[in-house]
Image (cartoon, rainbow, N blue to C red):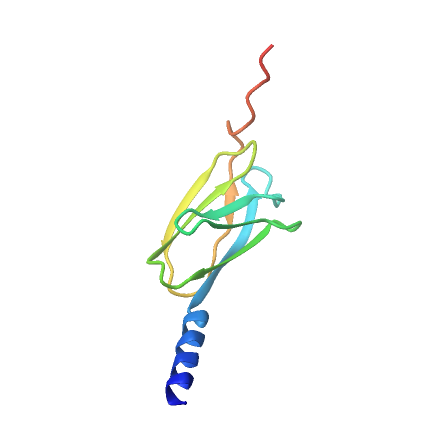
Length: 107
């Protein structure tokens, strides 16, 4: 019985060992929030997209030594960001309009 309780407690501790990175994504020139921006943690493959308010939230395991995020949106320069994170953090990205656009159709 004691081993069952210890195993259950260990499983709970592993589930609770997570943190959240969240924030907003905005256009650098206008300050407008951007909808549908991909925010990805390349190390784990987890990702999300900004909502109608430009807000993103991504929950990751605390086992990650550092958090890497790739922020990508059509028509804007990609942003790569890395930071140490042992607890929940908030970060707002400002994307610069640029060359991340579709190539013109040949013909």
